[in-house]
Image (cartoon, rainbow, N blue to C red; front, side):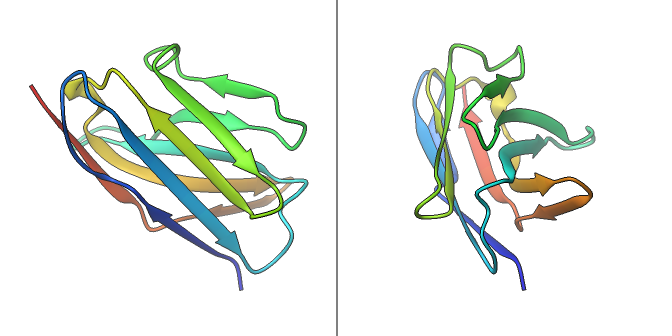
Amino acid sequence: QVQLVESGGGLAQAGGSLSLSCVASGRTFTYYAMGWFRQAPEKERELVAAVTSSGDTNYASSVKGRFTISRDNAKNTVSLQMDSLKPEDTAVYYCNVAWRNLNFWGQGTHVTVSS
């Protein structure tokens, strides 16, 4: 059974930093893309950042230059370092792993950025 467990959310002030981590278990995820999505109140879920199995990264334009995604295949983890946070980064952040038609989600972790 695949399980994704996120940690690291919380409250930060604008301009501050938070780090999110996601540990995946249940199978080998070497070939999976790993990423982070977020959903703000009354908005659709959106991609924040993703990293492919080969290490290529992709960022939403709104976070490029402020957020950094990384993965550790040996530990089945994907992390998101969030710097220069803005109030508009406030959302529930979800870990995601995907490969072909397989798609798995974490339970979400809250990030709140105060102005």
